[in-house]
Each structure stands twice: as structure tokens, then as C-alpha cells.
Length: 321
Image 1 (cartoon, rainbow, N blue to C red):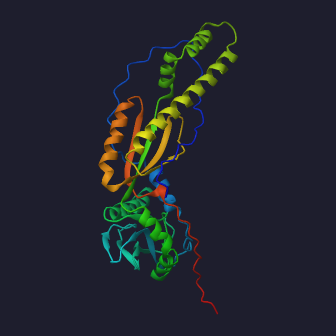
Image 2 (image 1 turned 120 degrees about the vertical axis):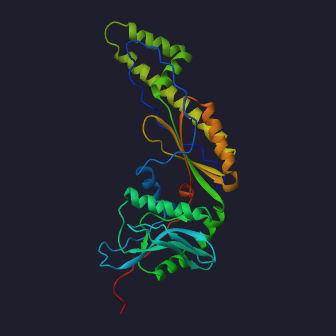
Image 3 (image 1 turned 90 degrees about the vertical axis):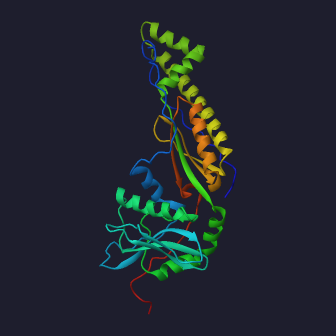
């Protein structure tokens, strides 16, 4: 796992609204709320996290379970001792969560009907609840939502065949946590700020508001200029935020922003003993950029910083001849 923070990818320009006939005076902005850790949007954000944890691909069980029992796998941890985490597993009646051990790694599992779980709010929360409980004591490699094996022996085979990969990742992720940060702005307010600082934009707006006849080409020119200035401003802000938080994190990842108001959608890998430092720095940065809205979540298992690809054969119901 590289320990240098990644440079955020270039973002497409945010399309600006057409210039109005006259520029109204903006109302005084209310002070932004203090930056704090928030609950993630549900079920969308957790479903996204639980949908491809660790990039691990496994064959799903048969659609028809016929009452068979299987093993639901939540994550992989480093331990030589068996552990029981209590009745916190997925299901209408929370199942007992325990480990299946192989050498010094273990899968955290619970007994379950042999079926594919729908990513409902309750199911995804149950999956995440187990990972959060385990990560309080262990470094975890989270598995994909609805990863179900037929038997304990199948899980042991997974641990055996992927042992080297699991051990390598567990060593690299030892005592590290992930935090999510989304940064949003109000494009129209930013445009007003840009106009105050950019004379050519002010003159162009004035031309549009006073010109008689068609203003099509002037508006097109205005829109292109605003798009360019918005992108320049957003890239500058994102670069500054990454730089500030990079000083208290091990690595970072820029994900694609969602919607016109989001300028940053990032994940940060933070050493467990620097969690308080990272928390304080996020609040400090949030106070510096009062016109931005920060959505800060975590700690999570290292969803964005683990990449294990497994190819498992589907177990068959018939014995070889």
C-alpha cells in the first residue's frame, strides 16, 4: 500500500446557471455548523461501502436454499485464538458471531440460511455493525455484503488459499482506520464571490443585463468563463484540504464527487493512535473554510485501501465420480 497521498483527479467543470438580468445582493450567510462526525446517508452510503468491501469477489450460494445452513463471512482478522463477539450478526434474530481460525488468520462468521441477502437498510446495518464491533479490537479486512459459504470447510479453504494475501494486507493495515470526508459548496454563492474578485466577469454580467436584443453569445461566453473559474477554485480548495489532512494521515484516495454541489469525495487512512489528531485537523480545516460544508464520517474499516481479488469455484452439489 503506497503511503503517499494520491493527487485528486481533475474534476469536470460545474455548469453555471445562466446570468440573471441583474445581480441581487446576497443575503447574509448564516454561520456554518461546527464540523463533526456524521452518520452516513442510509441506505445508499453504507450499501456502497458494503457492496464491494475489499474488492473481494466470491461465488454466491444457490438461490434456493432448501432449508440448508451456511456461514455468513463479515471480515478477516489476524488472531491465533478463537473469539466470540456475541449475538450481533445478520438476521431477524441476531446470530452469534464467532471466528473460524486457520493458522494466525481467522474469518469472522455467523450461521445463516444458505441464501443471498437483499441489501436492505437493516441487513446492511447488521453487516456494518459486526465490522465496527470487531475493529474495536482487531485490524479487519472487510468482506463483501452477503458473502455466504456452504460449510466451515469452505471457509478454511478460503483462508488457506488466500493466506499470503490476507497476511500481507493485515500487516499493511495494522492499526489503521478509514475516515470519509465529503465537501460541498453552493455554486451560486461561489459565483457571486468570483464576480467580486474578477472584473472581466463583472463587466460581462453588466453587458448581459444592459444589452438590448439577443444576449445568447454573451451568455455563452459568461457560462464558459464561470465554469473555468469554478473548476479552478474547486481544484485549489481540494488541493489545500488534501494537503492539510495529508499531514495527519497515512494515505488518501479521491473518489468521484456526486452532484453539482460536491467538490470533494475522499477517504483517508489514519493510524489508530493519530485519530484524535486527524479529528482535530478536520475541525480546524472546516473552521477555515466557513463557506464549505463538511460531511465527515468514520472510523470505518479500510474499505478504500484494500484490494484483494479472489477467484473461488462454486461448490457443486454432486460428488465427483
